[in-house]
Structure formats: C-alpha cells, structure tokens
Image (tube, rainbow, N blue to C red; front, side, top):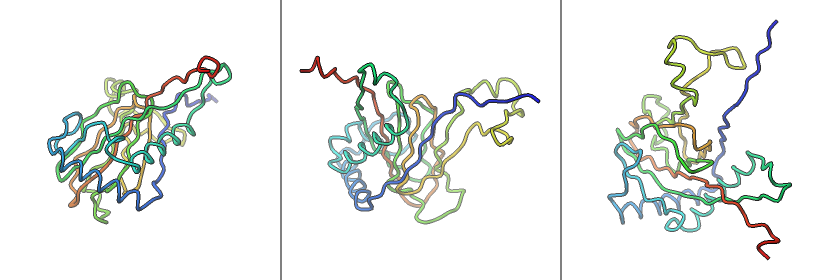
Length: 217
C-alpha cells in the first residue's frame, strides 16, 4: 500500500485576549482616533475605516500590550535555528485599526516585508447573533492557488483525515479572538452584514537582527 505524507503545513495560530478592560480601552482609543482622522487611509479595505499604521504610538499602553501578546505568540510558534551561532532576532511591530459597518469588506491581500501577521477582534459587530448570513468572515486562500482551479475545479486533494482539502477556509470572528499567520498567506474579509460595528486591530511583525553582545559592548 502506498504511503502519503503531508508536507509544508501552514501555521494558523488562535488565542484569546484575556483582559476585558484592555479590550474596552482599545475600543475607545480606536474610536477616538477615527474621530480625529475620519478620512483614514485606503489599502485593502472596501468601505470602512482604516487607520494609519502608527497605532503602536497613538494606541497607548493597551496597544503596546497587544503587540507584546502577538510577539509572544510568534516566539512560541517558531524556532530560531541560528541561535547557537549567535544570531538573535527581535520583532518590530506595525499596527493599525479597522472599523467596518454593513457592506464593508477587505479584498485578498498579503503583507509584504513582514514575517507574521495577526488580527485581534475588539468588537465582532454581531451583537450576540449567531446568524451565519451576517458574513464578515476572515477568509484564507490556499497558497498553492491558483493551481487548483487551473486544472479541474471539481478535484481536491485529500487532507490527513481523508476528506477533501478546504482551499478557502473561513474563520468567524468573535470579540476577543486573536489569530496569527505567516504574512505571505493571502487573506480577505467577506462582506459584513452585522447590525453593529466591527472593530479589529491588525499587526505586522517584522524581524530585526539583534547586535551581537560582544560587538554591542
């Protein structure tokens, strides 16, 4: 009998923010920044408000704590194979906020120049509803695309359980959820039809080589 090995898996890390007070403070600071800079910027967002990428500065201590949470998740999800040779790395975080209402979405995109990207949901906007038709899911694209659709759209590779692989998995946000994935992984946000306001924070982690202690001294 033949043997199948599953190679080159893509990590998708899931955790939760533990501080309800921290979430509340983040929400308040984001809405205050939105009031200060109503125009925001236009990048991947289709509608909605996208802040500048300086939230680590204007978001205060709660933003810095969130960045630290993401950096901890990153450190726990990888190995530095150069550590024994003295090559150490730290993270330079880049952070921004998104505020979305009914009909808003984000087109497929990646985050060039970063290693990890994370999204933290400060308010899922569903207002307690579990109705699946409200949309707003985070959608991830199989990095082997578009190969799958260039051959035969009905054919799928098997996953480790023997079922058809899901080439575009979706994650339904919940308030307090934080997810992290490699920055090269294409992702989008499906159109949101909740009755509330969706507020999220995106974080890029850029690796920076630390100076050798001997050289620094």
